[in-house]
Length: 124
Image 1 (spheres, one colour):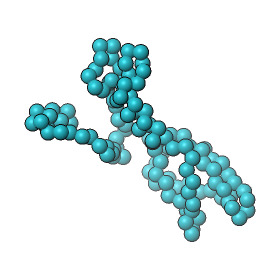
Image 2: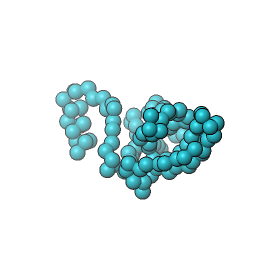
Image 3: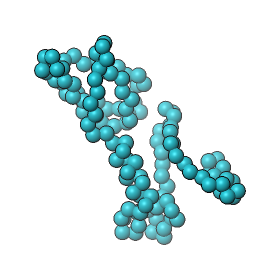
Image 4: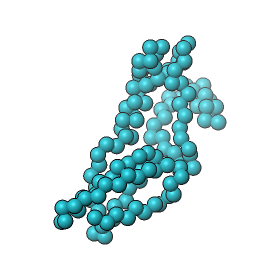
């Protein structure tokens, strides 16, 4: 359906930009058809025949890099709570208590088996 709608708009010479793409909780993922093809694949190939990035591959790599979070600091509210929305993946969480000079380290997996609105309680 989406391809058909885009083809109709293109036939009318309407400039099309696909930006700010979001997914619903029911979506399982996004599939990119065009990672590589030996005869080429117009503009969507991510790599050339030597597996070096093409411009589309650079865009995907930059997007993945932006989405991949390395270190993020957060502070709890007056009740000692912090709310975070996380992508699927493995997380290492370090909680520091400044008054007692102590810390705890936890590993957390977020995947399709994870329940929505999980509450992780940590005592430091």
